[in-house]
Amino acid sequence: MQNLNLIDGRWCPALHGGQLAVTDPATDEVLTHVPNGGADDARAAIAAAAAALPAWRDRTAAERARPLRRLAELMLERADALATLMTREQGKPLAEARGEIAYAASFIEWAAEEAKRIYGETVPASHPDKRILVLRQPVGVTACITPWNFPAAMITRKLGPALAAGCTMVVKPAAQTPLSALALGELAIEAGIPAGVVNIVTGDARAIGGAIFDAPVVRKVSFTGSTEVGQQLMVQAAQHVTRLSLELGGHAPFLVFDDADLDAAVRGAMATKFRNSGQTCICANRFFVQAGVHDAFVARLSAAVADLRLGHGLDDDVTVGPLIDDAAMAKVADHVDDARRKGARLVIGGAAATPRPGLTARFFQPTILDGFTDQMKVCHEETFGPVAPVRRFTTEDEAIALANASPFGLAAYFYTRDASRLMRVAERLEYGIVGANDGAPSTAQAPFGGVKASGFGREGGRYVMHEYLDIKYVSWGLG
Ligand code: NAP
Picture 1 (tube, helix red, strand yellow):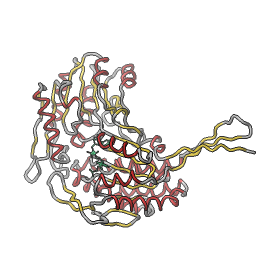
Picture 2 (cartoon, helix red, strand yellow; picture 1 turned 90 degrees about the vertical axis):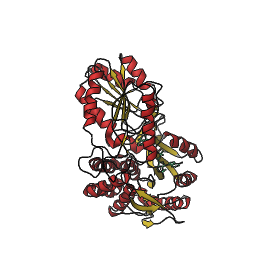
Picture 3 (cartoon, helix red, strand yellow; picture 1 turned 60 degrees about the vertical axis):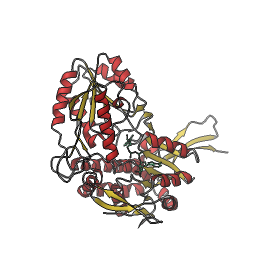
Picture 4 (tube, helix red, strand yellow; picture 1 turned 90 degrees about the horizontal axis):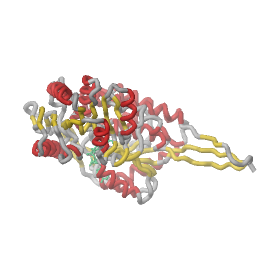
């Protein structure tokens, strides 16, 4: 288990000493300690990334693609070990962790392929003796700051395109899940990615983030995390006008119309709501169900929820793991209590649980609340837990208004079998990602990202390459 920082191809402890414990959220077992790095560690990593930039940038696209493809292959070859490590530090069931490793590798593979398709343009000039060229060039040294809920995929969907474009990168993983990041660093070296092209610094988020934004050489930062921290980073980015991508919080609505295929809607709801114990940014947070199918939907969803099995992610047949920490448990319990106090009906779940002896009290029963209202916290705040609040609606216009009544705009879902409604509703939802009869829209080929307080920038698809490329216009006078 790698537990040191990666700077300029070398594994190093924190420059000024200090360590952070990494624990299993299901058991509180201390897995290892990682460096409690700070501003000086980040500066060393930035210097390494700057030194490595010219040679990496000047490689041909094929030369950059080759080690990236190898990295994706290595991730798949070592998927079992990587997934086990992820489950231990993050808690998600092993099958989900395996799925995340495959998903994470797909971003590296996709980026390796896209490296060869970074096209420029020629534009007809308005003077016979001029030519207009548009070049796309790597932005330079980049950095990413990533969350704990997808410890591998949130890194690779930034790292892959950055490296494919010819940039170098400093990675700051979440304090709770640094081991998956460091394991990726080991594989990057094994894959032949040169020293300094990828650097990983664990430790004090404020100090590391501060050093990143203080350095004019860092030309782009990609952040995935909470809207609150994203807002702070926007302020810091103003200092050197650092380019930003922000993948922030969400509060996804999930609409079920009377004409929906209810079995498909329940499958979609289960996939989006209870994966990762409800700790995903595109989790459905508000279920709006049309009056004609409301009762049937709640009954079928409740039956599916009753089949979920709480437990340690490495135990057989477990489908829902622990929440990440005590603060997460307190927030979920508070949302459920608040909703019940204000009149929501508890359909199933609703309390903390300890699935077996030896496990922490960090497990929350998958929960359905019926009849939530605007006054409840579940209606406005990201719960980040396995809680599905449901509410009845009557008309399509009402459903769209309810769905759009949020400062967030990341993902939205709806189920209908009416093709006209499908297009109409998809167009009117103010969200960056819309799952139309689909509860699992994320994939490497498609642009992932939000609008409104959910941030800006896109990851995935050909769109992500633009995040790591500058446009240069060359006006060529022929003399
Ligand atoms: P978070 O508290 O914002 O942390 C995310 C990352 O930012 C971590 O690496 C954290 O480091 C770091 N960080 C915290 N404060 C910082 C600061 N002042 N300066 C620089 N870095 C700082 O978010 P989280 O609780 O880990 O993740 C959950 C949130 O992420 C949810 O809101 C979720 O919706 C969002 N998310 C969004 C997407 C998306 O694509 N839109 C995907 C996944 C998650 P430490 O861990 O060391 O504190």
